Image 1: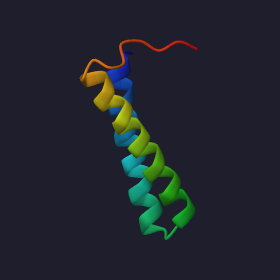
Image 2: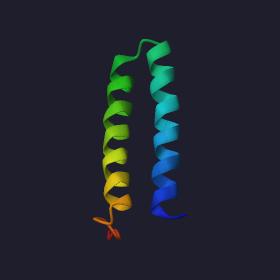
Image 3: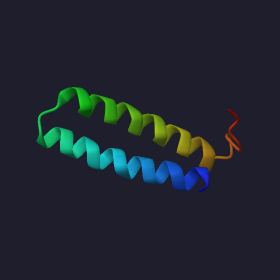
Length: 57
């Protein structure tokens, strides 16, 4: 799986989890999902702009 697909899937999954947390009034989970979504979107923007071309462990 390439990085763009991974990030897109992660954003989708986390959005579902954030919606669930909102429905269940779980503020901590909502906050965590929101932070991870923001982080993934920023990385995806940098990948799309060509600023990130590879990741190393």
